[in-house]
Length: 146
Image (tube, rainbow, N blue to C red; front, side, top):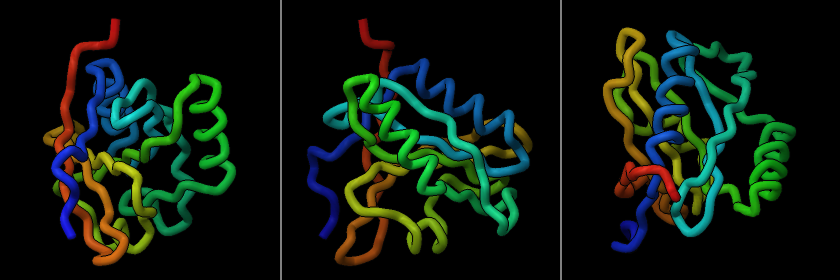
C-alpha cells in the first residue's frame, strides 16, 4: 500500500540549510538528526551525535537518550517529532537495507546525498510498515515561516 496522496513534508529553507550544512561538516561520515514540527511542516531540526560502533562512514545510530532529547526539544518548541534526517556520503539519497531494517513507521526520513563534501540531493521517505518498504514523499522546501 503506497503513501496516501496527501502525505508530504514541508521544510523551511533555514532548516534545509542546517541539514545540508550538518552533512557537509560531518563528511565523510554520516550525520543524523531529528525533524520537529507539526502536521508535516518542519519547524526545527535537532542535530544528534552519530554514536554507532559500526563505523560512522556507513552507519548512524540514534540512541534512546538522543531520541528522548529530540522529543524533549520538540515539546519545548510546542511541536512533535516528525522524523529524522541523515546523510549518505558518496551514495544516493535512497534508503539502504539497513535504513529499512531499522526504521520506524509513520516518521519521515530525509536522506541527503553528500558527494565529495557537497550535498547533491535530498529526498524524504516514509516506511510502509506492512510491506517494510520505503515510499518517497514529496519534500517541499519553502521560505521561512513569518
